[in-house]
Amino acid sequence: MSALDERVTALQSAIEAAGDVIDPDVVAPAEATFSHAQERLELSTQHTVVVLAGATGSGKSSLFNRLAGLDLAEVGYLRPTTSTPLACAWGPAGATELLDWIGVARRDQIARRSILDAPQDDAFEGLVLLDLPDHDSVVTQNQEVVDHVARYADLFVWVLDPQKYADAAIHARYLQPLATHAESSVVVLNQADRLSETDLKIAVDDLELILEREGFRGVPVIATSATSGKGLPELRAEIGRRITSKRASQARLVADVRQVARRLADAGGVEPVPGLDRPVRDALVETFVQCAGVPQIADAVEESMARRAVVATDWPLIGWVGRLRHDPLRELGFGRSARDAVAEVMPISPSVQRARADLALREATEVATEGMSRPWRASVVDAVAGESARDVIDELDEAVAGVDLGLKQRPLWWTAVGALQWLTFLAVVGGLAWSVAAAFGLVDPDPWTGAPRPLGMSLPLVLIAGGLLFGIALTLFSRWLGGVGARRAGARAEKKLTEAINRTTERIVVARLRSELDRYDRWRNGLSTAGR
Image (cartoon, rainbow, N blue to C red; front, top):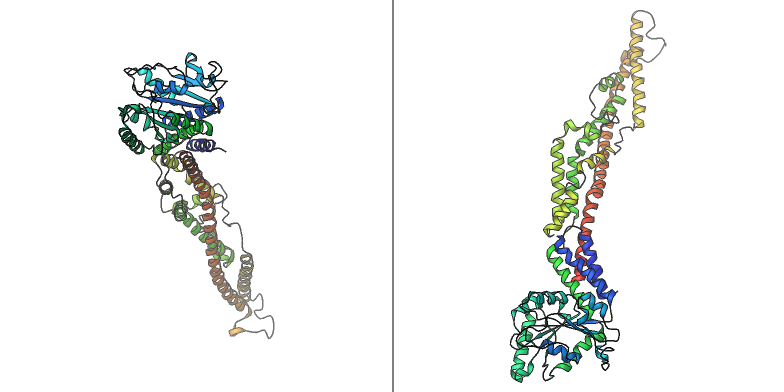
């Protein structure tokens, strides 16, 4: 891939990444650059378009005639004589299609070979030389022609004269805006025959200093005289070198891409951004956890499991009373989420939770995009936390509702303890029934001779006392064990809910923000490659 292809591809990638972030008026020149580069390369890669541009009386038309070897351009010193661009093309095939694209009239196109049957000039093979109207002409149309044709030049030959080489008209209007095109420029100080050698050296040194300040450091400055021929061999050699290297056309297009890329960078910014680092992300997840009511749900799960343990393992009469107590999670599975079930004990209202989550999301996004230009930052914040993003609280509610809190699970020890409690209950009931029947003489309180009598109690009293004592002990133990299990269930529920919120945050916030930051990176990297 050539340097031009690489830059054009990078610039295109940057513009595609930006989308509608950047003002269309700023992007339009870049899109025009794509079209221009493509059309130029499709028309011809064998021609080098060299334009002679200068002020009135600088002698560029005379210089054009000397380079062409023919008196083609009308020469004048007191007023502009070139009103339309004049082109001379070297090569048997000419450059008609290319010149038509540039906008040079057919009557002003001259083929240096074949038509005029001039001697072959291998050094200029493929050269298309244009003599432009004077840039400082009072005729507005002439200035428009210069501006138009300058867009198509592969190599600028700026023709200056000793009297006006520092003229602001050419420096401010053309040279300074084209500082990015230094590699596609040659500066000629014409009419050198009018100065002494000493004065000429002073003028050339002064001109080089001016050009260096304007970004043209290292640009060749050639002193010429169309009258005496001074400097013409050097100028022809420089033009020939650019043609032979086949770099002039690409260098100009590369400069165009570089210029557009730098303008886009100024408009859209290319500063690095911190991104969503781990502490900021964790703080955002913690805020979402609070807004989704995870602590309250975990507490409700713990309370619900403790109550269910009581119902399942307490002495039957006490367990029946426990069934009458309110359980906030009892109705789950009937269209209510865990968050809805505990809404009445939430510390803040749903609207405040929503606003709090939105604010946290916006603050995290702003921290992640610190350093971005205003257009980019506004675009990213809108994409992640604006109206175009789904309501985060709704997503979190869905994530919470989809978590299995383990409420349908029934530990095996509940069944075992429940069975023992029923045995103790039956022992107490049986002892009471036996005692009542014995009191009415219906049964013998001591049916077995020699049966043990703890503390002198009869067997029915042993059943009653033993059942009550064992039931109380078993109840106390099961409540302690149930509390441990309930706390573990609450911790598991909190962990599951937090993980669900973490995944949701990764999916709807982090992934979306990462996508936007990737766009910005493509923008930055593309402009960096295109503008270097």
